[in-house]
Amino acid sequence: MTTGTPRTDPDHLVVTAATLEQGMAWVEQKLGIGMAPRIGGQHVRLGTHNALMSLGPGFYLEVIAIDPSAPAPSRPRWFGLDALSGDAPPRLAHWVARTDDIHAALQAMPLKPGIAEEMSRGALHWLITIAADGRLQCDGVLPSLIQWQSQPHPAAALSDLGCRLVKLEGRHPQAGAISAALQAIGLEDERIALRQAKTEGPVLSAAIMTPHGVRMLD
Image (tube, rainbow, N blue to C red):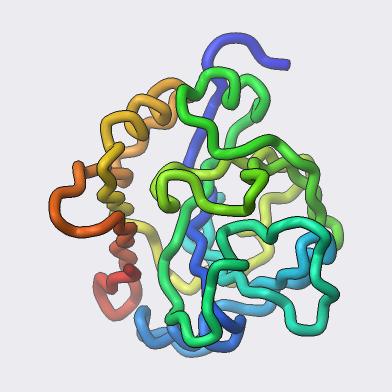
């Protein structure tokens, strides 16, 4: 265990989709880069699979969907996937923050993104917070926490396509409380902006610098 405030940084963006193919095509269309996300693999425990795309060292984008070839898990799937209808469009639904002490970070956070659970995919092993009902806390604007227990970081195995996060903006009625939760775990990144929601619903949007200029994911 570490002492004091745990080190916490943005780790990855999460795009949810009714099917993995739809999610991958949506990212490619939005960013103007063909064959951008590449197949990652299966999360057998939760009945999902994913595709990944590098957004630079230590940061990436994940497309995740229910795996139709996997048996249904005995528990709710993560990232709110059970609530997606078959015709739900892909969207930027969530983000994940990396910490070096997930238990200390959870203890420090006034808002809880779930409980820390062990997960694995191939040679990758990690702890990640998952809500008992599988839903995204604060509509996805409050990040899940992850602590990688294997090396190297997944982004190191991905081709660098020259894409970088410029800004991640979250709008939510609890923006102040979410901001306080991020401060409590030492997450300070000038690319992250939280705004108080007014008439519009909770929204995440990301500005991504690509070889073709800045493109938006929302």
